[in-house]
Length: 239
Image (cartoon, rainbow, N blue to C red; front, side, top):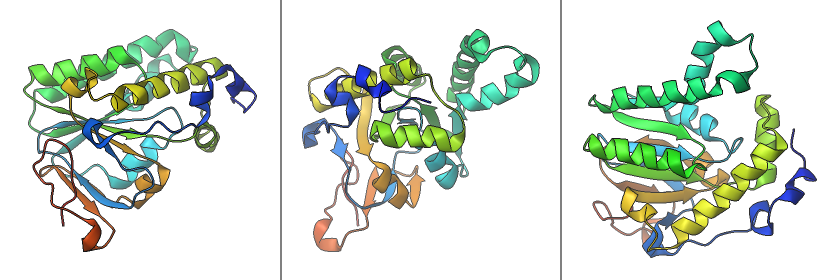
């Protein structure tokens, strides 16, 4: 397991420094109470975060639901392990990812809303997903689960599946780069994604639903702290 000593290979920003997101660049919900998130029916939602961030826990708690298909490369890993499990995973990892993306291409031909479980730290993968969704006439929405690396390390320990220190360090560096890209309203990522929403562990734990019935964010705060925003280019509060 990676340790705090291993994190010394990271730049200071990757060890937990916060990248602030301006309202024009997306919806930053870190530290804010959120009840529900809503996205248009038939859209593609990418739930991203470094290994151990809590993506699987969040998706297992809130999904699946009727009309929504969840795609996770771990599903393919489990399927292929029946045939290739005797080999070290590094030898057949590319096959897992290739099979995962083929499943996504097939799913895009259907009518269901799609949720993709992704680390989000590989720019080529994000571009592949958004391009494939665009060709299928769908918009891509990004939900970024941002956690401190120490929290992610604890998550890896809890799930009994640990990422090599060098690999985890690369994920953390790339994650911070992604947040910096999101913080720039002029970055091309905002042309690729219809909406970008950032949450932390607390916001994720407070979520009661992810729905696909139109852009919507329902706050758990009182009415005075909510303002109408359904249907805007960026997710806003809706009573």
